[in-house]
Every structure is written in structure tokens, then in C-alpha cells.
Length: 185
Ligand code: 5GP
Image (cartoon, protein in one colour):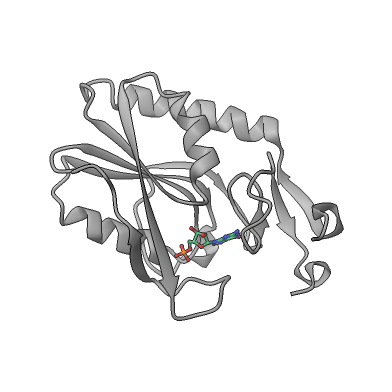
């Protein structure tokens, strides 16, 4: 098991900057959903969105519920999504007439979030919005609405704060750039 210092090219977003932005997003969401009357549902896509959801929900001052779903994308390599998304764990909540806010770690090509939006849209939520911590805007292949965006980041493979490398390093409190050569894959 490699130590992350061995392949960390740079720290892109440090823990303080991350937490500050999460607080700002929480305040914005609290204002926008002030009249939701307890009907706000945060949906986290497992597993990358977990640390972001957990921090964000504690900065949201309006009553809300949370739920989780898991998907797997298939068709291409492990570090690229094809947009062929398969639901591997469905929500426990019926989202009909709820104000749904999808909480995502990162949007790259946009294909994953586009298929999740399409799927959830068929279930007649009262509203359906997206909150993404990171946006690799230059990589976009499919247009997707991002209502709340943490940071626009350059085209690099990042890890930490929920984002994995081969399922590890999600626990790190910062966002780092991987030196793929040094990582050895
Ligand atoms: P998209 O469908 O937008 O191309 O890809 C979104 C998914 O790809 C994210 O939910 C995440 O799982 C994965 N992903 C995209 N870029 C990165 C990255 O830089 N690092 C990590 N760890 N995962 C990424």
C-alpha cells in the first residue's frame, strides 16, 4: 500500500478552503430552500459524495432528510465514465413531490449525473437540482445543470475528501492531484 505522499503531485484544495466553501454552499442552500417546509431531500451518490454530504448537511439550517443511491458505470476503464449507468442500490425514499438536491463529489464528462437526473426525473420530484463540490468543466461532454458548485478545477485526476484511487484515500481531508506515473498505474 503506497503512502499518498509518494504520488501527490500537489494539494489542489486544502482543508480550510474546502470547509469554508462548504459553509458558503450550506448558507446558500438554506436561503434557497427556506420555504421547502421540511420537504427537502439530499441525495448522495455513493461512495464519493459521503464526506461532502456529511459536512454540507451540518451547514444546512433548514429541516431536510437524506438518502443514498449507488450506481456503477460500465463500458470503459476505471478512470473514465461511459455514461452507461446501472443502478446498484436504489433510494429508500419515494421522491414524488419532494425537493430533491443531488449531492455529487465531482462532475467530469457529465454523463453520470445526466443519467441520474434522467432516472430521478421520471419519479416526479417537486424540483430536482444538483450540488457538485468539484467541476471539471473543460472535460464536459454532456451539458448538465449545476445549481451549486464548489470549485471549478483543471483537468487532472484528483483524490481525497471522498474521491478515491482504487477505492482508497477517500478519508483524506484535502483534494490532491495524483501523479499517475508515480502512482504506478
Ligand atoms: P462523469 O460521468 O461526469 O464523467 O464522471 C463522474 C464520476 O467519475 C465521479 O462521480 C467520480 O466517481 C469519477 N471521477 C471523475 N473524475 C475523477 C477524479 O479526478 N478523481 C476521482 N477519484 N474520480 C473521478
